[in-house]
Length: 539
Image 1 (tube, rainbow, N blue to C red):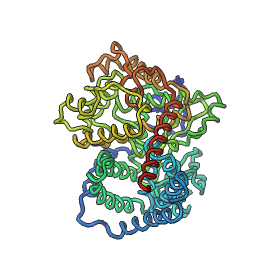
Image 2: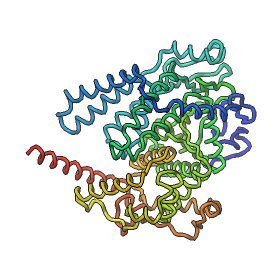
Image 3: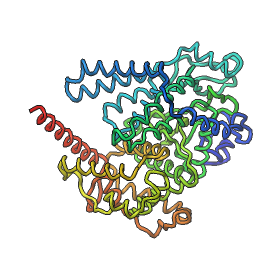
Image 4: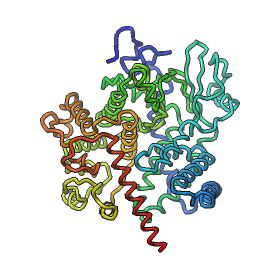
């Protein structure tokens, strides 16, 4: 545990910061934070206008989008489609990634979301769109200087003793530069791209026009609830356009980490003064890149402990305080030499209402105790399932009362039939994936993917039991008061987790490596089935 002695900075007791930072945060004396709640409310109040159903699309922008993406698809069709499945998928992903890059900030941000979909989207899509996290062409320094001087209302040299002209990262909304303040402190400076606000609003108009047409036409799109997905996308990206909200979220996340004593996760301090709508000056943190597993292990860092700490901190923030980082991915995480994780880029921070938070808590408690009715009721509260449907009917019709079976033992036809029937039942009930649940699931998928690199041999079932035991040890009284379940006396029942993984009830342990092998076997089975179907059609 981190030493919190009197040698630490005064703000260390309030927030999970580094022990000694370049400046001290006094939360009661931050001019940029006073209006944060009003600014957040104002940005949300703007959403209905941005997402309203239009009779006609914004013609100029939709023509641009169609031409760029249409050209990418045409080139793939002409030159890549018939050159083998692997080449075809890689080429299509690359051409779409370049198209997104040409279309600018909104589509780059959408590509970043796709890049976090390991386990959902094809590997080629994920790997290509990962390049949009911090390898987007940077704005010229002259443009950066103009933005900063506009925000400072004065010359750059009046505030900074030095300023690196080449960014350390460039992404959809902004780019980040290292600098040294005139008072001598090293910092990083996040600078918003010019004209990004107006371009985002035009793109949201295009997306909100298209989204309703997907409902009811494609089963998977209906479950994903495209209008709600665009609503979530709009809510997050509009808030990202004001860096004062991001700085406020940094403090909120840092406060929760301090309250839960998760000092192995730290956030950078935002500057007490130098935070504006388009500029964010913050503490400079360094560390190993998230994917530098070899470097971490060579330095003696137990990567499985790093991952466990991040998972527990994420769950505590969501389940107990209703606040969590909503965009976990490798570009937003550094691991410091001592094993602490630096959590960066808080532009997407999920905030749950009290009702939503308690529903998430019931959902997770129900998952670890295999209490299906509690999970169903929680999903109804979150809006994923209709409130008028009875829990008993949902359990019966969705087959949740059936014993878990090893899905690798099913034929491709049997598995396809199972999935088709489940999809039909879900659509029949009007199931949806609500906005906050999307962010929560996206973070869980990132953590699942991180296990593959950082702890591939760890027993997943055993790890869930360890995390459940942590919550029983530290939060049992609160969970009992809010959920009505004493997790200290109710044993962990992993049958539900086994079912979600397609494992039989007699499976005692499984590593992530073994789970990946099972997924690959299923993928190969589906591809072979599709190939045979195509051959039969040609015959």
